[in-house]
Length: 234
Image 1 (cartoon, rainbow, N blue to C red):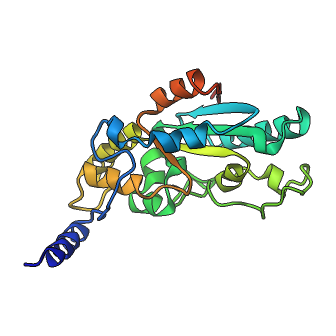
Image 2 (cartoon, rainbow, N blue to C red; image 1 turned 90 degrees about the vertical axis):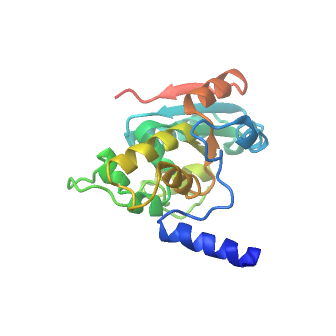
Image 3 (cartoon, one colour; image 1 turned 45 degrees about the horizontal axis):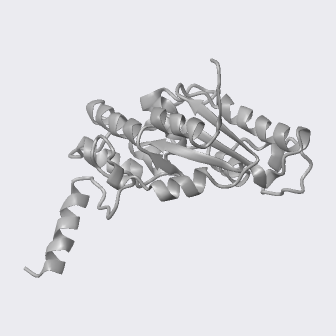
């Protein structure tokens, strides 16, 4: 068999088993991410870009109020303290259930993320997609900050990213959750934990940055890059 035919057949077999055929997985496929698989240059370029102020938001238990708090901080820094908007840099350090902020809709649907983490809507129904990502308004930096339907009151991740928020994804959390998803029966038949982890890591929201372990990334961001630490008291 020709090599090209063999590779095509192998890819078909993987797809049939329910696992994604991926060329590269952010952070690699090992349970513990190795230095060789960590894109340190991209991490530094994104998280250490010039800024007048840097703020880090740790989120573990899933509470969407953190997005409102991030929005309020952006507004306070820009309109109250007078920091230029392009000099404000924030990072959302979600791990535990809050890792799901960074998962694409396909992942929420495929692995029933809302059901798995008990994330429900006002009616008590498990949320089936990442409703926290899409913008709720057209992005307009010239809009009235007091407009409840405008850019500056939009708590969506997509809009917050445009304002300077970086969504971080914990490689360790993904690997641990992949094992739990398989054990709970939330993964398609035939998928291994490694398959599930690779699938999640290659289907994140646009702009998400994978870090080896969130608790380690928090220390680096504080110690090396001067981020002010904030979390939401529950």
